[in-house]
Structures are given as structure tokens and as C-alpha cells.
Amino acid sequence: MDARPAPASIEELLDRIVEVADDLPKRLRQCADYVAANPERIAVSTVAEIAEAAGVQPSACMRFCQVLGFSGFSQMQRLFRDAYAQNWPDYATRLEKLRESGTGSPTALLAEFIDAGRTSLENLATTVDPDILESAIEVLSKARMVHIVGLRRAFSVAAYLAYAFEKMNVPTMLHDCVGKLDSRHAIRAGDAVIAVTFSPYSSETVELADAGRRAGADVVAITDSPASPLRPVTQLLLTVSEADFGDFRSLSATLSLAVTLVVAVGTTAARNREKG
Image 1: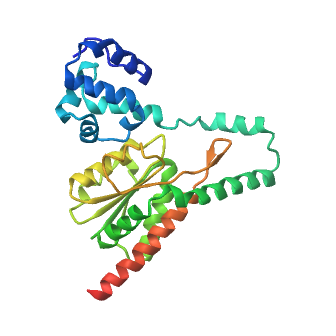
Image 2 (image 1 turned 135 degrees about the horizontal axis):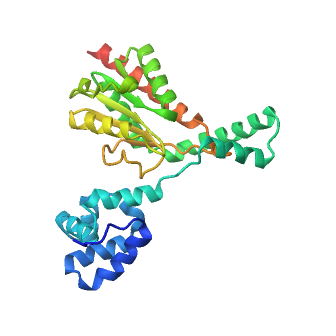
Image 3 (image 1 turned 180 degrees about the vertical axis):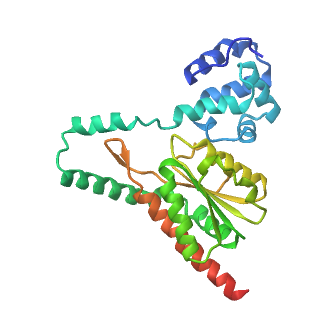
């Protein structure tokens, strides 16, 4: 393992690869060549996928990461995810940007946000994979209990899903983490989890989704990027791209997706009950 600290940026990592490439064994050199040529794939691929693409065993990929100074593949992948994740400014900075844009009246603001919402809705059909949507609806409609988690900006989406599913007679539990209460042990095999998180991603949401997966529950993710940290947790990844105005993002498309899930799952579950 490289005695130096692990690279702190993708640029440092690529420089490190150039430094060590000539001294690497053949299999590790294949890993180096693949990473250098396909940096955009590292954030969204598993170690097995990268190993297959590079023509090596997963153990060779792990060893390659350690040679570069990382503890393992997860640490290296986190570097790429952080680079591709969208970092949004704080609210004070966003408000200052709005003032600088010259947007004056509330009516003008409303028009801008309506336009951003319209763009988000128009993009929704291209960002959500219809096959994954169908699979998610099937999984959720058959679940014994649907567990829902979404914090910060995603909380309103999670709360709506919990409310609407209950109205559709779909057994639901909202995990809100109030008081740091941990209810992950309520998740059982045969249940399903809907995890909602956007950049910067909520570690609590990701952890609960992963706990659900390990408990034997199916996980459906609603997120904003294929590089979301929920990707290793589930293949049922519904990505939603929200347009913004002045760095303020609406939830127009996300809530439209949520309504779609509620109505489709509710009606499918009702038909299943009638057949049963």
C-alpha cells in the first residue's frame, strides 16, 4: 500500500496513477488503465462491474485501490461521488444571488418558479426509466408494509407519500428520525422501503435504506442522480432532475412522481386484495 495519504481529488488520483503505472503488475495495470480512461463510471459502478470491464478479478481492483493509498474500493469511489455530487450554496448565498439577478416583485418570482417547475415536469419523462417505475410499483404493491424515509428537503415528499398511501389503504410507516429514534428494526423481510434523498445526500436516509435491504426488504429510491449513494443499495433507482431558479429547487417533478406511485400502487394493491 502507498505510504502516502490517499489522493484527495480526482486530479491527484490520476496523477498518482501516472506515477505508479510502470511498476504495477499486469492485472493492476489493467485496473489503472480502466480508471484513467473511464473516470465517469467509477461513481456509479460496483467493484464487480469495474472488475469485469477491466478484465480482472474484484480482488485485483481492491488491491489496486490499496496501492493508491485507499483503504478499499468504497473510499476511492467516495472521491468520485463527491466530485460528481452537486454542491448547493447555503440559503444566504441563494438569496443574494436572487437580489443580484434583479428579480423584484413577488409576481416576477412566481413566474420564474412556474417556469422552473414546467421545465422539471417536461424533463421527468426522460429521467425516470419506465421499466424501473413498473418494477417499483409491483414491489410496493406487494409489500406487507411500506417504510418511508426522507429528511430535510425530501421530508415533504416522504410525508406526502406516507399520508397518501394511508388514504389508499396501503400499510405505511414514516421514519422521521425525530429525537434520533431509530426504527430500522421495524423493517422485516417482505416489507418495502422508499428512500428519498437529494444532493447533498442524507446519510441517515442511506443508512436506513441499507438496513432495510439487509433485513430482506425491497428498496425503492427517489433521488437526483445515477451517482447517488443509494445506487449500491438498490437497482430500483428513480432519478428526478429538478430545474432551479436562483439556486432554489422546486419539488414539482418529484411530487408528480410521488403522486404517480401512490395512485398506481394503491390501485394495484386494491386489485390484489380483490383477487385474494
